[in-house]
Image 1 (cartoon, one colour):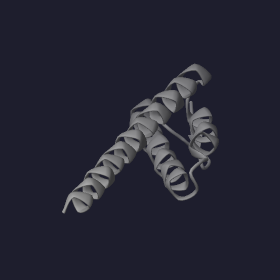
Image 2 (cartoon, helix red, strand yellow; image 1 turned 180 degrees about the horizontal axis):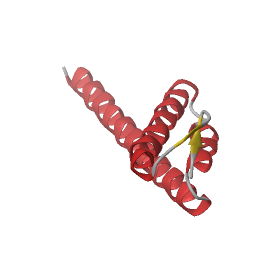
Image 3 (cartoon, one colour; image 1 turned 45 degrees about the vertical axis):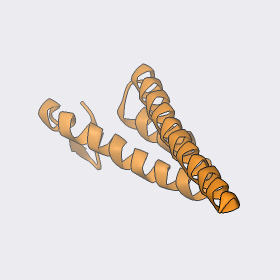
Length: 93
């Protein structure tokens, strides 16, 4: 049974608490990543290993990291396309 701050969690409570802990850890890690440009896996990995089995923790961190990197890639691509298209319009005007 998982204990959290000295209290044993029932299996039903675990279903709600574990995703919440991983979600809070992912939010904190994404905030650090957005601020500094690195640190997502450095912060998220210990949190997930604390509440999940090692194989599950590795899978979750990998999938969340992939998702974050794809979102950053799409955002950067969109801003780069907007930047080059606005530059082209001002040169032709």
